[in-house]
Structure formats: structure tokens, C-alpha cells
Image (cartoon, rainbow, N blue to C red; front, side):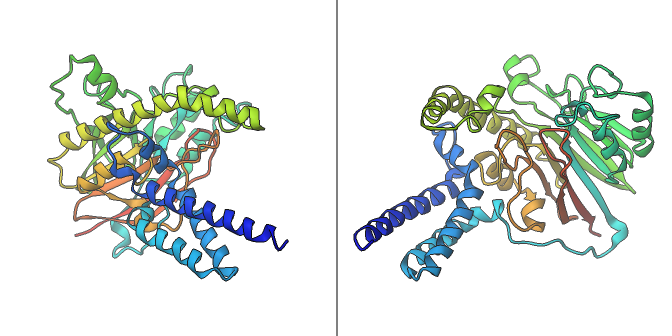
Length: 376
């Protein structure tokens, strides 16, 4: 033990230092444009887990009396905190100044109102959840037509009518304005789609890669609120590629998974990061004239990423880190537990009070809700 113990301690110190370096690199990986490098963007995906690992490692070194290693862990978290705070925030919900001026907004990639975990369950759990959730505004993605029995799991007239009764106002993305026709809004207040000029409408690449959002306006008791509902470009991984992590059961399977990631998955990730950046830039540019705006939906990218930074630099706040404590995930399958559904907002008259992630598992995304107050 006298010989082995120092060797083990040295190995643990080296491993800890590597962890600290990787954590810091991930914290600032979102500052690197994916047009030039993909690796930093991939590292950002793991940032919340790296930050937690660094914290626990620092506590372990502190408890063992190794103050220098504990201090290095603390310095890593402090140096990366400007970005770590977006993925592992330390904030709490707030009370409104006037309860009558609040509203609840939810975003949900509904996966065509399917049921990924209980396909034989009677009725439709997703529709039942939406009908009873009580949100004032629901921004939906991946839903083409409420009236199509071939799209919606266990469709019935009664289910749809109950949803319509709860949300008498509805709007859909305008064809010819976006390539994302799967965007819908349910509302307790009057809502309408806002046509947005698209000068590159004849460019197929433009439609396929950029216009992944639609603009709506909700009239909340006289306060006209523009809302962007977006479904940004995904990684387009097959189910087999998504299972690359869960398939690791030994050395041989690990080698195979690493090979698949390098040659098949990694190029798709890079393309998605770059395309999403185009999506976001186009959305920011087109909606720059709106001082007050909520932009929410399936962002398909995590806090502190390059695309996320583009939104923050354009003046958008993120409701989650302003009102929540600790990391969360909104994607829930294949061990890709990432926070990719976002609620951004800007404007002096909006204040985020609370954010909640629901755990209904009908889709591969969880619904996320934010409570806002309209200030005088």
C-alpha cells in the first residue's frame, strides 16, 4: 500500500486536472464558430455533466485534505461560471407585482401527439395533458394537423373537441412563409399568424435549412405579444446512431461505438451546428424590428452553445437560468439527456417569474413552461 497509494494519488490528480481542463474548454466551446471547428460545440453538450463532475471532484479532494486540488476545482468553476451559470443556474422563482398581469406559456415538441412509452394506453395522454395543463399559450412543434387521424395517436373527435374547448384560439404556420409547417399555437387569447417576407423563397436550400420558425401574435388583454415558434434543425441521427452510447457493453462494443461516432455521427453533428447557426441568424435578422418578443420551441441546441450565444447577443434573455436552480434536460431518450427546448424573451415589459419542466413521457421531448408578468 505504501508503494501503490502514491501512484494511485498521482493518477487521480492527473485525471482530475484533465477533467478541469476539459470542463473549462467546454465552458467556452460555444465561443468557437462551428463553421471552423466542430469539437468545441460537441464539448458544450457535456458541460452540465462536466461541471457537476468538477464540483464533486473538488469536494472529494477537499474532504481528503488536498487543498491545492480542491482549489484548482474551485478556480475551474469560477473561471467558467459566466457560461456554466446558463446550464447549471443558481436562481429561484419570483413573485409577481400583479398576479392579474401574468400568463403561462408552454413549449412542447409533441412528436405528432404520439405516445412513445405507452402506445397501447387508451385515449391520448398528450392531448389529455394539453387539455388539462392550464397554460395560457402552448407553442407546439412536430404537429401538422389536429384533424388527421393518421397523424395523431388514438385520434377521436371527442379528444380534439375537448382540446379546442380548452383553447378556443389556434393558429398555424403560414405556408409560403416557412419550411416548418409543423408549428402550431393553442391559446386562450386571440392569436394569429404574422406573414413574414421571405426574399429567398425560390431558393430550395433556404427553405430546407433556414426558415425553421414562424411568427405569431397573441393579444393578451390588449397587450399584443409577438411570439416566434421555432423547430430548429436537428442532428438527423438514425435510431441506430442514437443508440451508440447505450450499445457500449464492453471493450469491443466501445471501439465500435467510437468508430461510428467518428465517421458517421460526428459529421452530422457538425452539419447540424452550422445549419442551426444559419437558422438562428436568419430569425434574429428578420425579427430585429420587434422590441418585445418571445422566441421558444425545440431549439435543438443547449445553453452556452454557439447558436444560444447568438440569441443572447441579440438581446434575448433565457427564462430558465433566470428562474431555476440546477441543470435540466428536455430531451429524454437514448441517454442524450440534453436541455434543447428553450424559452427566450426580450423587452422591458416582460419579466420571467418561474420555469417548469413537465415529466410527461409521450414524446421524446418534455414540455417546458414559463410564467411571465407583463409590466406596466
